[in-house]
Length: 206
Image (cartoon, rainbow, N blue to C red):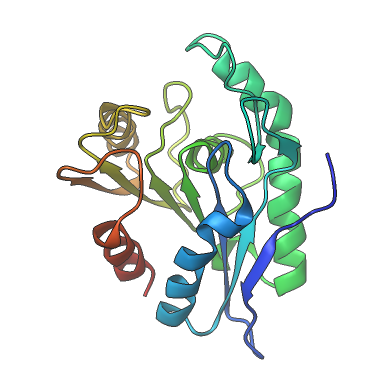
């Protein structure tokens, strides 16, 4: 781990909410800062922070929460469990900085950042009122519905890195458990974020 290079995108004089953005593996906080700026315009009373993952990526430049080198369906949950305390601490730290509770917190994650955000809802404590998953997935079958949390899952239908079927399956499992969930499959979008995704995200968060 090294110095935290998270980026505070917006800090209004009176903070009425907190939006934390979590980037994908091999990226940095700066990659999601532009999305954070657009969210800040939609939510002018929210503190918006692009959080940098704590570990250097082992597949090139950028940062990561957990290694994807040799990752499998079987070992992914264990890797996530190992770093979940650090993820939870990051959320709690920024809630302290903003002076808000989980009820006023939104987690927005892309790819690995979405995986961490989604998986955090399967642990104690409850960290957020809302989770927005962009090209993400649960690591295992969803067991806890988290009545206190609303889920928005957005995924490109041409994603070859994290196939959209993962979001479809996660949303279906959440609905079966009675959770509040929306699912948007974006046509002709690969593993990325375009303006259609931005409009969906800001629309949900306004």
